[in-house]
Image 1 (cartoon, helix red, strand yellow):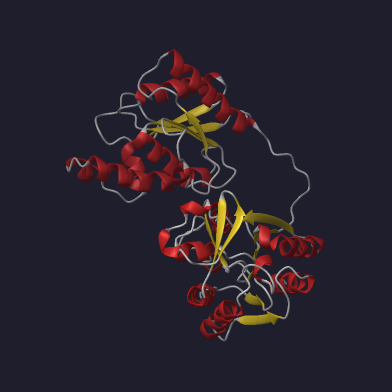
Image 2 (cartoon, rainbow, N blue to C red; image 1 turned 90 degrees about the vertical axis):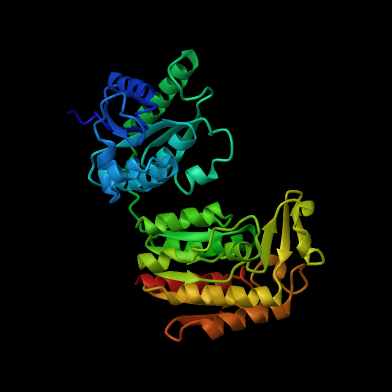
Amino acid sequence: MSESNKIIAVLGTLDSKGEEHAYVAELIRQRGHTPLLIDVGTGSEPTVEPDVSRFEVAAAGGVDLEALMARQDRGECVTAMSEAAPKLVAKLAAEGKIDGILSLGGGGGTALGSGAMRGLPVGFPKVMVSTLASGNTAHYVGSKDITMIPSIVDVAGLNRISKIIFARAVGAICGMVESEIAEDGEDRPLIAASMFGNTTDCVDAARAILEEAGYEVLVFHATGTGGKTMETLIEDGMISGVLDITTTEWADELVGGTLSAGPTRLEAAGKAGVPAIVTPGCLDMANFGARETVPEKYEGRNFYIHNPQVTLMRTTPEECAELGKILAEKVNAYTAPVTVLLPTKAISIISAEGQAFYDAEADASLFSAIKENLSDSIELIEVDAEINDPEFSQACAEALLKHLG
């Protein structure tokens, strides 16, 4: 096999979509690459011969497929295969046995194919041709770099439209696996940083200090997806340190805002054993859409119209107490060195004295809850400054550099 020959996993339900997957496999061969047909079907026998059988896929997830199929519960079968497929493809990728992955599907096929792709690291070529690609794809893509292509017509046989779409998808995945990343000498350790518009000055100043010290800083917008993506890269072992300035996504998780990153936010650094600094940046605000979309139960609260599409709601002293407890309990589980820093004059631009979200009682409630619940073994630094003041940025950067040693 020449160095230019790449192995591309072609994963799908080969009982119902065998013809379509065999078609793209042949196009891959014509492009000079090797397809690896993986069957994740659980209905009738596959219509084409797979290279990896459904039983091998199931075994990778510890699933007894024979017993499962005997119960004839399609939902149960799809769920089991959607859990096993990511484990199989992740193993193949880690062993260098596949260089990219392509899948075609409707509802069930998209769930299976995209689920397998989410088990692969960022940067690994992934293409999903789907009947659902023109709608809300957040739960299919997750925090991974999956390229989704609308199938236009259903993935049901070959016709003049589907052949065009499938051929373009093959061109996309082949182009991806053929693309070499130029070596530019960049081998600096990576720092992940969380940022919001209200903490931009803080993160920019801290980033400059860290980059001067020889690190490369990746900045993630704390909009739910940004926090999830940051934590995924931490879990994938790509990150050497975490500058978690902006933990605002927890405010949305608590009150039902639009930018939640889920209940596991703030856990990745602890589980991965990565040095970190954590601050309560922007926990003064939860995000909603246009003003009229804010739930009625919050009428009478302090709102700030960020723009016509985004309404910010000030968190109350009671909510801040809960947020402080959550932050402390998450950080208490960290195994690598970690420091919590508190900017005692403001946790965002608009929470400073004289600004729209200034609330000394709420901030005091937040800080007290953090201090009361944080383990004595974890370093806590209070800085008499606003979050975007240079002295706070410097304190954050220096604390992280100390942990990175």
